[in-house]
Structures are given as C-alpha cells and as structure tokens.
Image (cartoon, rainbow, N blue to C red; front, top):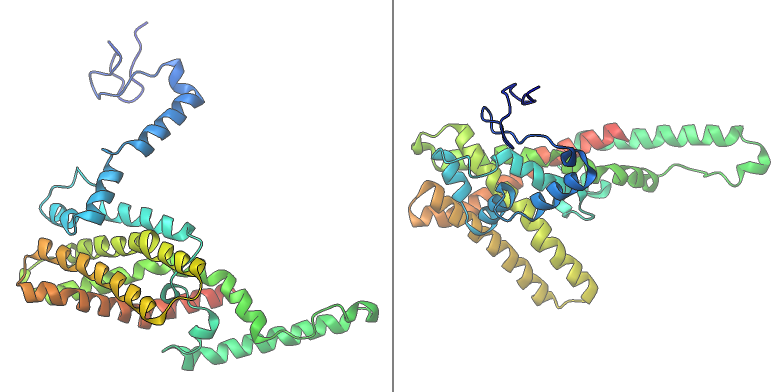
Length: 294
C-alpha cells in the first residue's frame, strides 16, 4: 500500500513529499541521536536566521529595522522573537544592572515612595506582630531559639529574592518609551507607531545583548581586579556608553536617513526617554509586583 504524507496526505514517491516538501519519516528519525543531531546542527548553523540576525543586530546597526520596514523580512527573525531570545538570556543571567533591579532600599526613594513607603512599614509591622504572637505561643524552652522580631532587613531580604526576576520580566516596558522618542523625533515621516516600535525593539534588544556581552563581563573583570583607579573606572563607563550611543546613532541614520545633527542627537534623546520610562513606569511596576509577591 502506498504511503501517504503525514502532513498533507499526498502519496509519497520518494524521500520528500511532492505536495508540501516534507521529508519522508523513517525509523532513524524517531531516535534520540537524530534529535540531538538536529539540535547540534541548529546551534552551529552560522547561516541560520538566529545567528544571521544576531550578527546583523550587533554589527550592522539599523539593518534589521530597515529591511523589516522595506518588506525584506523572511531573511531575519521577527523583531519580537529576537527580543524574547535576548530577554531569556537576560533572565537567566546571574547578575543585573542596578537600574533594572533595584533593592528595597533604593525603591524607597523613588517617585512612588511617598505613597508606597507606608505600605512597606505597615507590612513589616503586621509581620512583626504575627511573629511575636507565634513566638509567644511556643514552649518556653524553644522560645529563645525563635527570631524575636521581623525587621526592615528581613523584608528587604524577602523583597530582594523576588525583585530580580520581576524586573527581568517587566523589562519590555522600556520599548514603548523608545518608540515614542523615535515617533517624536521623526513625526514628519508619516510612519505608524508600530513601525517606530520595530526600530525601538531592535535598539532595546541590542541593549540587552550589550549588557550581557560587554557590561556584565567588564563588571566581572573589574571585580576580579579589585580596586580600580577612579579615573580609569570613569573612562571605562564613558567608553561603554559612547559605544552604545554610536550604535544608536548609526541605526537611526540607516533607518531614517536624517540630517547628520539629528542622528548625532538621537542617542541622547533615546537614552533620556528610556531613563524616564525606567524612572516613572518600570521602577513603579517592579515595586508593585514584587510587593504583591512578597
């Protein structure tokens, strides 16, 4: 009896289906070795869309966005797919930048703190009363071994255990702010906001990879070296920011082809709106969600 394609039902006449092109399934395809081989091939295929997209993102600023806006999309990963992959890497990383992962002490001096600080103090007081009630109910022989008070330090520890993962999950909220900055700068181009959001997604995805590939290794290296001269540390910070700004400038120039002074101004505008989004929305959401979880 003739074998039919499992995908489209066409009668198979060779190794591949003439209807949909799917490969005929053989016994070897069901084995673990075949699956591992596919995984290795995908991970080492430098011509694959992921590696091709990553190279373009890092070393050809603006190309992914320009091609996407021009309709040349099949060659590259979709903007949000690439962002999600970068976010997974960022989520799994052992360290984060302070602006993306504020401890409780820093969160208590933010724009939302006038409203939220009393919530923290009330929660600590409630847990302290509950702790003392549980302690009082213990037999006297066990009472001395139990914690006496629930303090700010205890809540800061509980808060910090959740804040990092919450911050990484919320990091996408920076993208609309960058898109708004682009829409404001290039409002005469008559582009949809979603098209500016594509450019913003690529820029912020680059930022996440830049953190992982440059900033975190540099921070680790400086930590291993130990004490670093203040001028050297300042110079390194400025150099890393300048490198990121250069990428932004070239990306804007390729995508929007503005006057040179506009492309030179763009990094300052985009980093400023990103910082405003971080200060007014991201940090507030991070606190609220972490507070809810703890």
